Image (cartoon, rainbow, N blue to C red; front, side, top):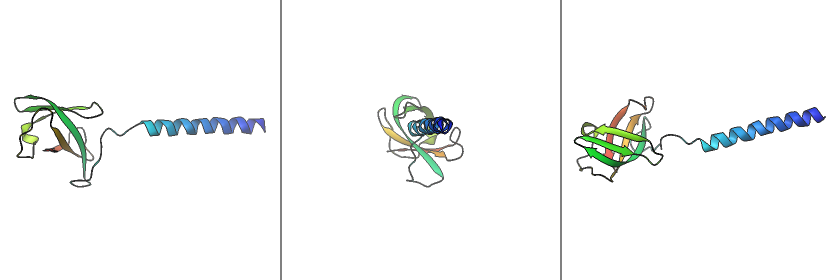
Length: 102
């Protein structure tokens, strides 16, 4: 009987640890379904502009650099503006599709 209580306690502890880890591990991107479900979107705040290179940072500290060619908006993007970056859902690292001003 004592062994069963110990085993139950150990299994319950493992379950609690897994639930806590799962709840604290946030997704690296915020998913919005504005355009289509085939894209993953992330919002970045523009922190610096060097020529045609835009530097941005998301709320979770992730940084990005993209060129003016990726911008799909006719509005001029300035430092402090928030932009939405669209990525291929299956190729997040290299799959920047377009950038729009929010």
